[in-house]
Amino acid sequence: MAKVKTKTKRRNLRLKWKLGIEEVATKHFDVSPNAELIVREGNYQYNINDLVKRFGTPLEVVFPFVIEERLNKLIDIFKYYSRLNKYRGKFYFHYPMKVNQNKEFVLPIVSEGAHIEVGSVNELWLVKRMWEQEQFSRQIKVICNGPKTNKYLGLIYELKQKGLDIVPIIEDRYELNYLSEYKGELGIRIDPEIKVQSHWDKRIDRFGFTRRELLELGRIRNLKILHYHIGSQITKLEDMIAPLRKVMEVYIKLKAMSPTLDTINLGGGFAVPYIKRKIYSTDSVVKRILKILKDLSDRHEIPHPHVIVEWGRHIVAPAQISIFRIIAQKPIPKSVASWWYVIDGSFINDLPDTWAIHQKWHVVPVNYLTAERLSRVWLAGSSCDSDDKYAGHGNYISLPRLEDLEQNGKPLYIAFFDTGAYQDSLASHHCLLSSPAKIIAQNGVITVARKRETAEDVGKLFGW
Ligand SMILES: *Cc1c(COP(=O)(O)O)cnc(C)c1O
Image 1: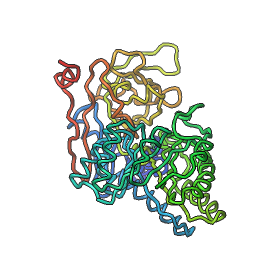
Image 2: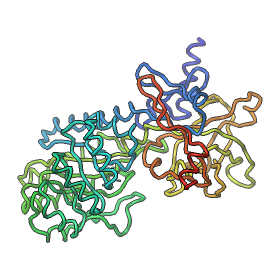
Image 3: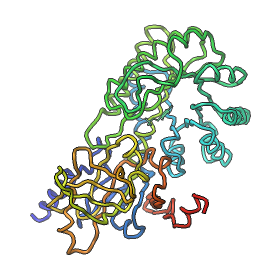
Image 4: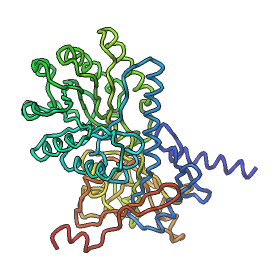
């Protein structure tokens, strides 16, 4: 009887904190019998509260197995629907490096069969290093986006000559001109001129050629890829599909002029369920993509194009959590929330999208998960900036009441989910705070990826 009771209790706790749910990317999270947050990787189990005791806070924990699992699932889904629909084009996943360039993210993803998309010369330089050190397959394909400076073009030419399968994407007429001498395959970027719901979908887009401009260019030698990227974190299924239909119509016309064209690249956009509400499924998107491509190409009697997606955020965001300690509380007069909880890190510095684009995150306690009484709180970062705060995805966050925990003597820790995309390279040192330490949990082993910065380390960055 007692056992049944604890089982129900744990199930209720999982529901309450939205843990253990595949569709919202919390599948690996659970509550331990002593009410602490745990993460399961097969037979291994990581107790986050123990990691915090060992490594301190603020702390980032990376789970490479999550990256591997998510990528394999995506590849399998494409395989499944290709076979089912007799789709004859191939599928390639290109990891957009700007989502997270850290080694502990890039190496697992390329080792599982991802290709790469870079947006700058320095990202390409990392690819060169990995390639020279044979850290990935010689068959890897690299796509180059972003404005092509002379240095960037130089490195593209160098790597092409050394035998890397590298395709620059032409962004404008200048690049078309520079790349007219390029001996390898080329891609070109189209602005689909369609509006979708996403922070990045501006009224006026500066990337790529319009449909009209493209069709006026005539034949492009060695053209292989028609590429578009409409934005990131696109939360509606229809918005994932509508641009493709439009771009596929242009593809058909372009292919008539440049018959070497054989690939369509949909860019990024697949959303992450940050606030733990279900969004569209991978199945539903992949099914629709392949159907559109197949129907249109069959109707126009052209081969089914190869398909590239660059859904980096979708694959890597859930592979990292960020943990903070609550170091103080202060009453908030006259508001929907009652307390400020001050964390020992900074949103502006360590989760900069909170500040930049009002990113929403799922927050759960790391310990005291059974606490019955919760306070409505806003979180404050420990910089001296009034913008350094996070108020949840409603009007407040519910977290255990500190009064109830105080006699216990153990501080409250909280975890932010899905912090693996974009935050690291945008991070900064406002008020000269130190960056969080970062550890990697894989195969039951913990390794330190980044030590906690000392005052001396931070001072050095500023010329001291
Ligand atoms: C930023 C970017 C991506 C990444 O999109 P996400 O959906 O955020 O992963 C993909 N492709 C291109 C060209 C980009 O600029």
